[in-house]
Image 1 (spheres, helix red, strand yellow):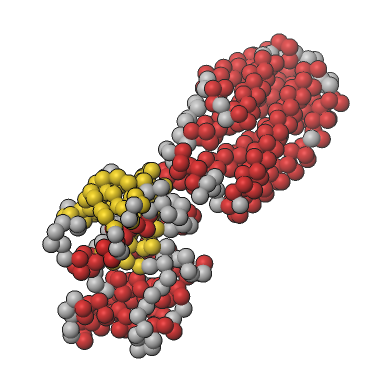
Image 2 (cartoon, rainbow over the protein chains, first blue to last red; image 1 turned 30 degrees about the vertical axis):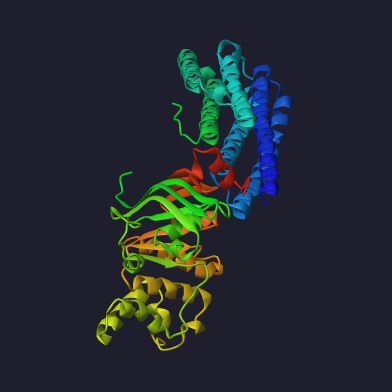
Length: 216
Length: 253
C-alpha cells in the first residue's frame, strides 16, 4: 500500500511541477506578446486556458483520491496540502497570462509605450520568483525562497511606480486612458502573480519544515 | 505541559524472560485527556498499557524496574492493593468479553464485588453506566437478556459500561475497535470523546487515523522505547523524530 501511495504521490508532485511551469510559461509568453504587440502569439496563450483548466481538474481529482484512499499524515499530508495550493496558484497565474494575452488585441492599434514602463523588469522579477518556487517545490530545498519577502517588496514597488507613471500619462493626455488602463491591469496581474509565488513559497516552506511563515 | 498529570512513569523497564520489552520509558499521561499509544506490533505499547493496572503481574517471569505513579502514589510499592488499583484503572480489551450473564448482571458485577448490595443503588449504577457508555437506549427494555446476544459493537460498549460502573479514574483501551465494523467503531470513538470529560483514556491502536481522530496526545513506541510523545496534531502533522515520520507515513512497520 505505502509503496503504491508514495509512487503516486511522487508522480502527482512531478505533474504539478509541470503544471506550474506551464502556467509560468503562459504568463511569460503573454508579456512577450504584449511587449511585441504580437497578436498571433497572444492567441496561442489564450488557447492554452482550456489545457490549464483541464489539468487543474485532473490533478485536483488525483489529490482528492489520494486523500480518500490513503489518509496521508505528517510529511505526506503536507506534500498533499502544498500540492493542492500549488495547483490553485498555478491556475491563477495561467489565467492572468490569458488575461494579459487577451489585452494585446485591444492595444494593437494604440501607440506603444510599454517600453517606457517598467513592465519587462517587473515581469522578470515575478517570473524569477515563480521559477524559484518551482525549484524549491521540486527539490524541497527552501534556500531559493528565503528572500521572497524583499523580492515581493520590489514587485510591489514596481507596481506602484507603473501605477503612478500611468496616472501621469492619463492626466497629461486623456487619449491615453484606454491603453493606460490596460497597462495598469497588466501590472496588477503581474503583482498578483508575485503574490501567488509568495503563497506557493509559504506552502513549500510548510511542506518541507512543518512550520508556518508569513511572507509579507 | 499545562495539563495535570494522572499517571507518570520514570525510567520504566520491563523484561519478559530475557526480552527487554520496555526500555527506560518515561511518560506523563495528562488527566482528562485521551492519550494514544501507537507503534508497530511488538513495540511494547500493550505491555506499557498493562503496566498501568499491573496486569503484567499475571504473567510469569516478568521483571519490572523504575516507577509508575498514579496520583503521585507508586503503584508497584509494596502493600499496593491491586484490586483497588484495577478499580481505579479499568480496562477494555480488543475483543469484547462480556460475562455469560445478563446485560444487567454484567454491569452490576463490579459494584457488587466492591460491596454495593442494595437493588435500588445497583439499578441507578447500571442505568448511569449504560447511559455513559451510550448503550442505555438500545438495551433498556432487555436488561435481563443475555449479554452474548448483543452485537459486537454493543458488547464492547457493554464492556465499557462494566468498566465505568466501578467509577475508575483511568480507562485503558487495548485496540478496542479492531474487532468492530466501521459503524460500531464510530460509536466507540464518539463515546471516547465524551468519556474524557470525566475520565482519562489511554488507547492502544494500530489504526493511525483513529489515533489521530480520538486522541489529544500521542506517543510513538518502537522496539520497547518511547520515541516521541506530544500533542496529537504535532505528532501527525509534524513529528520531530524521523522514526515517527517514517512509521506514520507507512515507510516501515
